[in-house]
Image 1 (spheres, rainbow, N blue to C red):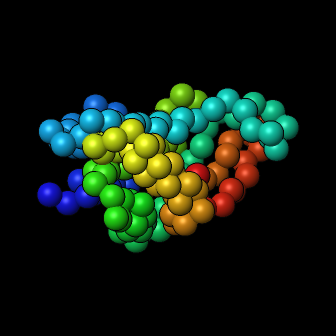
Image 2: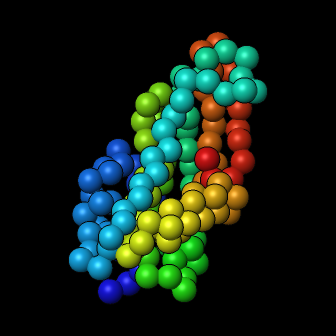
Length: 142
């Protein structure tokens, strides 16, 4: 069974249960999750954040799979990860990660490695829209 059971860039809302189902395995004594959501503020924003608009390079899904594979390499972890693109409102999930492993330490470590690498290497960009109409493009990974 592959270490990465789901790696997707999606225009549709992300479903945590689908990610949990993807990593369901009798060998796993631990399952960790991470859900990155759109928040209503940013330290650099002059007014409230009302939306994020994500766009992705055509190779982003392959890059996401490589990120998850690298994070799981040398472990018994199983990974499911998705990043949403398009316009997301406050409260919407932008990233969902589920990691199953025989032990909790491994599950937490792999999950953290996936999200930290997404932030620096995934070719996804976001345009932050503020209440006053200001929009700012921000870097890789969301």
